Length: 282
Image (cartoon, rainbow, N blue to C red):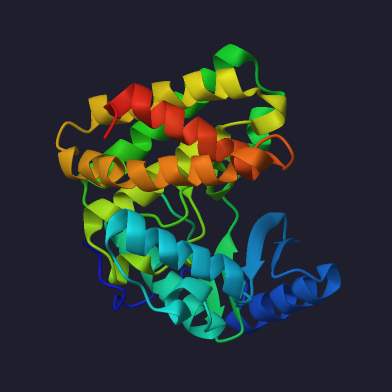
């Protein structure tokens, strides 16, 4: 396991001072009106990131109830709400530094302040890249992503935001970005790794017009492949099995709205069916 107390090492680009980088980052953030912005200096791309806003109370409460009843774990609302943006940014910088020191492919930090962090740009997100891929290329890309997650977990790590929007590709290398979630500080490792697995699988179902049947087949394939690549993942499998009754109950409760809402509800049914197919019924 990595410690969030790891010293953050700033890898400063040649010819640019920390002050110049932070000034350019703040100007880019102000210009776009968002908390993440891309900017360039001397033909080199960087990413500026500001502290985030808290998660909504209702969303945090639902997540708290899921952890309590499906996983038997209780988390503080402040943690689930991601309430302290400045602390989260500092924690993310520490996690990036620790993972880099462990040899993992994550963005390099080139400047840091309480209100802003500057990272090297590490390519477009996998979510964006999937839009232009053929079915064969999509399968290969997602197989590579699930294989890398299994490897990452075997090394004792956890992401906390393993969706395809937080994976990038650059020069043939898969990178992980966005380490704001700190649930690993409060939950046992198998639960956090199971959360990673569900986030990744859930993020590719119903993507770019994919129907439910195809999504279920894809999710089943990815879950099965993950456990084939992570032979020591029985504790993760056990976490998912414990969650199945709560997931089934949610599906029964939400049945009247299944086809009246967007992808979020439909994904719950895809996940239920894929878990049944890949790890069996609880």
